[in-house]
Image 1: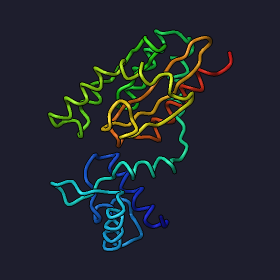
Image 2: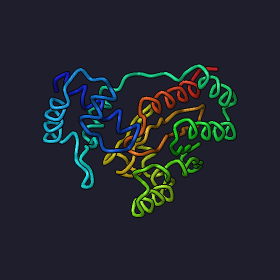
Image 3: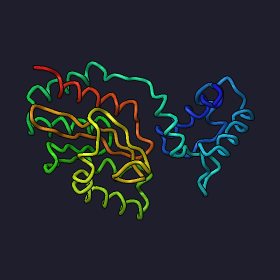
Length: 229
């Protein structure tokens, strides 16, 4: 993909992550001060659509990124760190590495990410929080999808037990059709070892979640959990 097309695709994804709305060419040029004409953006968007990176919802003139687009985006995801205030919050919450502190950290993660958070302290001991964050995401507001997301939450423990041993250690992102929780979701998570115990903590949100922010959060949590005392 050439640089101009990549810039346009990344900008579409950035806007869609922010708004959850289909993206049009004129709005894109104006909002992001792109040094490209709206006509050129339209032509490039037509090619991106042909190549399967964006699609047109039935009810809109704009376009939305596909799973293929998010896969491309994740391959080129830039490293991001928590800011100092956020880092201090989680350093304090994880000072004691026990279940109660992990639950408090999970609540803070759900608030910061505006997504759901699950924490399996080991394979058969699951805590989750922030479910209401998922239910108020625009893409889950349709009745059918609310049912699907509710079912995801109901099956969290079952899915975690099923995939726990197969997941590799360290941070990972599972997206759409590759996400065992739901093809409608993205998950940023880490499997970690703490003493004799193996746990799993993750952020579960829509496919258009803020991966940069959520990966920074998961990496910070992993660094604190696995740091030598």
